[in-house]
Length: 147
Image (cartoon, rainbow, N blue to C red; front, side, top):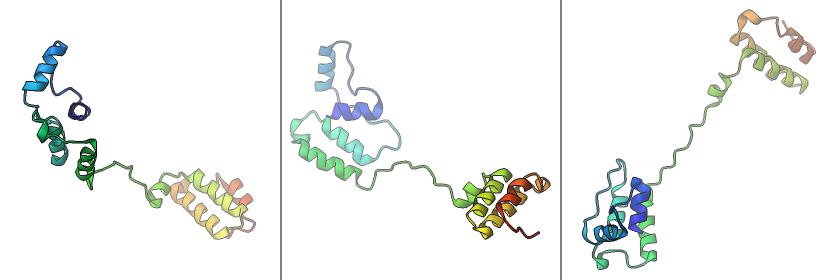
């Protein structure tokens, strides 16, 4: 199990040999190489090296014992990178003037006129020079839009 864990972490086998006999000899007689991958928790390095111990009495005596050690090594150490969730403000900043005008139109159709006007205001903030180009959308969505 130590060879598999080492190879999974380092991307190579801990012992090398040109023939199966050379590999077996290295496995039986050479000290296991250290884990070189930076950032590897010491508890995981210790676990792998214990699996690679030459003296059988120094290795884990059962898979149950190894399973407990893996749980202990990973307790509080698992760090899964999760993407940063954008804030509403960050998401809203990606919406262009037309997008805001279309949202204003949709809110107008839903008779949510205050939200509709906020969206139209955002559209004008995004592109003040484009004040009238979306008026066909704007005026069709709001029955009485104050000017």
